[in-house]
Length: 285
Image 1 (cartoon, rainbow, N blue to C red):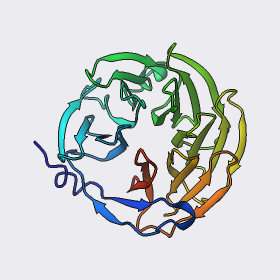
Image 2 (cartoon, rainbow, N blue to C red):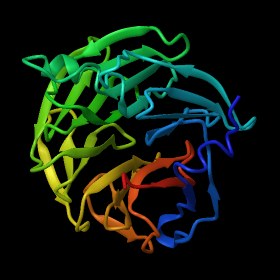
Image 3 (spheres, one colour):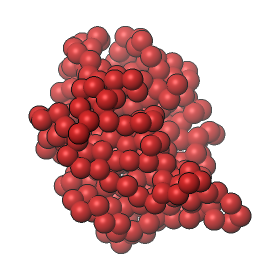
């Protein structure tokens, strides 16, 4: 069984920050090299209880890690063929750990099958069984997030659109149109009232999650925004190709703090469940 601390050593390293926000420690308190994948990692997430870490990437494998034991405890594989189907570009775990949403490429993009090839796969996390496929995007889904109550799913795509989905009824609720380039990051505010999306255009947009209407643009980054994470107390973190991490108030989109410049482009962010630590990983390279 691959070691949590060794086999990903050559793929990515992550940094963990104190997230006291107004007095945030701006340097990592330690670095972690988790492992097991054979290709680029595209998504990492914690389980709600903080016991598990889930990672997925271009090797078309989802790995579930026991953090305390430091081991892979199970793997999931979806729709895979020899033409690239099965590559995973995004992933989200529902707050109750019941559902796992996966975005990427489920089939080759040919003819008129764009929505099928870009379908979001919804799995039963415990069994790995496929529950549903959400079709609506016309290019791979590069960002996914569940609302805090698990009843809504937010997806962002290379097609420059974001979509709000009703998870209970497996239906499309709203299309969020406003970015001028590919969307690489998306999340909900902790209260579920707002959706936040980040794009290759350098913009972070704040949306009303109930109506799908755009509220404001959160200005600050000067390059691609590749990561967004939401903390339980209403703070949102964004990471960019400009090597910065910014902290925002999710209620009004105002910036709280700019963290010190990082050593690498920031391509992944995740708060620990209590919001006291922020996990940051390098960009897409």
